[in-house]
Image (cartoon, rainbow, N blue to C red; front, side, top):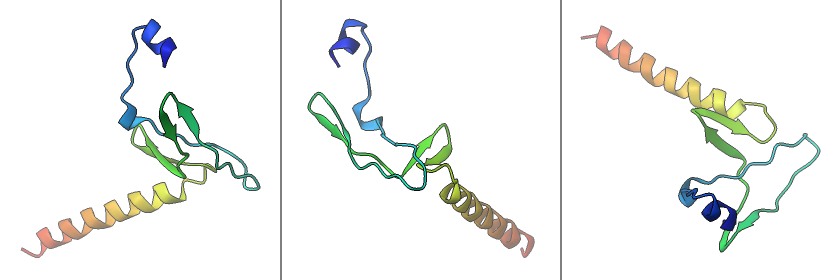
Amino acid sequence: MSKAKEAVISFNISKIKLIYFYSKRTTIKEGLKLGDLEISPKPLVRWLGVFLDSKFIFKQYIEIKISKVKAAFYLIKRLGNI
């Protein structure tokens, strides 16, 4: 963080997420420490509207999108019955 202060850069600590990308056989549990803040890795992170998982399978991303499409379809179907 001292390098950031030297470069006059500020970070929003509440938005910092940590994810490790690894193969199916490997798992990493260690977090990072930035100053006084301990950041633990997450299995799923949203970045620019895309949900990234640690193995690049995108299974959760697809499930989230399918549920949103189903909800929109249900609302459109209800409008058709009026």
